[in-house]
Length: 541
Image (cartoon, rainbow, N blue to C red; front, side, top):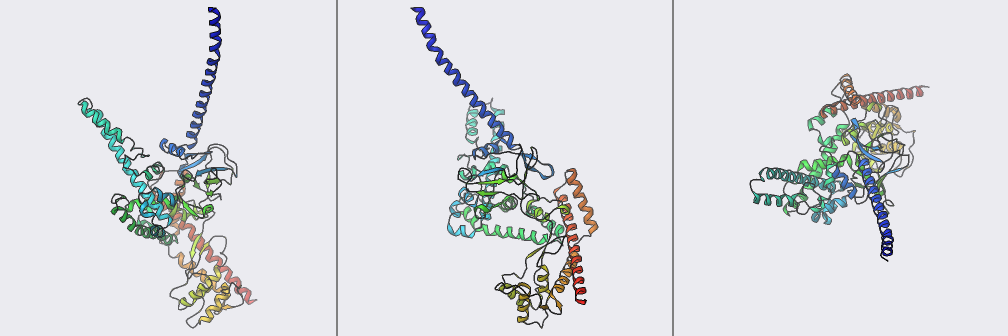
């Protein structure tokens, strides 16, 4: 009987032990799968710090088939970790991770002020985002300082721990309470606003200096861009940011007075840095009513003029909650850098707004952006401006993209209207000329038979365009030979990826741009003169 009971006991225990083995094996397999998946995420994110990677994962942001790598002269960029096919969606940034003006307001310590309707209506979207970034930068610096203080205190504690057990107990408690400050994530006790602490890891992914024209010394802006239409653009950017900074002052002062932020937390340096980040990283989401946003992870994507894809909003993505997505328009092999388009911008525009400059001589979107406005000293200026206004046109004129391969459509008519007439010309004659060149205010097509003064308007416009180009060619402070010599240094530096100072690189890029600008002006002058001669020959026949 005893033997029989023992046998039954062994049989009864066999099944549970087997099940436990199977359960343990299943648990180990699950853990192994989770480990491998986490390892893959770590690999795909690439050269991203562990704290930022952890934040990405908290935000449910997946790297997809991309990883961050050093791409040489282009800096850091996103590289294909696996084969990518044309049309494939490779980026999906969840809605809660994109930093929109609404998110900026909700996260800011200035929220009680910004939520008031009069404040929201008076501040544009990019100013709200700039306030958010400047405040984030301030709290990030405070978190870093506190972390350093804690580290120094910890070192002092370790060196003196043997001298006093009471001191050891006191210091240990103090360090333990503040240990979360260094990470800056989610600690109310650290003194960081809860809305800001969630975004501090994103700050780590941002550059200390965006490299835009806002970082240039004012003297350098004038010296490098003199004679170029880029000078006007650079001043427009810097003056616009200066005006925005002044517009923010009442809001910042009120926030300081209400105790929402420490005094001078949002100083000029921090706010200008924020505008520089926006200038180089802000995305306009056409699929979301042109809303402006910062898009973490995706903002590592570099520009190429040879692709046309761009980031946009897809309301159906992310389980119907919406996401910023990217579908590529080219195939990529593992190790190739993946690009998006920042738009059909010239190398000069990219230099001012993003801090890099494609080789102007081979850049497919290279152009001299000519502003051919009415001449204010023209006695007919007021009459011409009124005639243009009736047709929805501005006296400053559109921006004409001059290129090496021909004249932009419509520029000859505009130049003719600018040059036509004399002090004796009546307003009715100006109106008739405007109708000839630009049509009736109702949209009626122009009649090419009307003459502008003593010349057919085509010839007058070509002569005016040629004269304008000639005058602009004389406005450069350096010679073509000097610029070619400086620009050649920029080319060799990029090809060999040799480090050079930012100032020298700017000088080289600006010189290369000036070379191409003058080539375009000279070519436009030649085309205008050739077409004018052809018109005169046709008349003689």
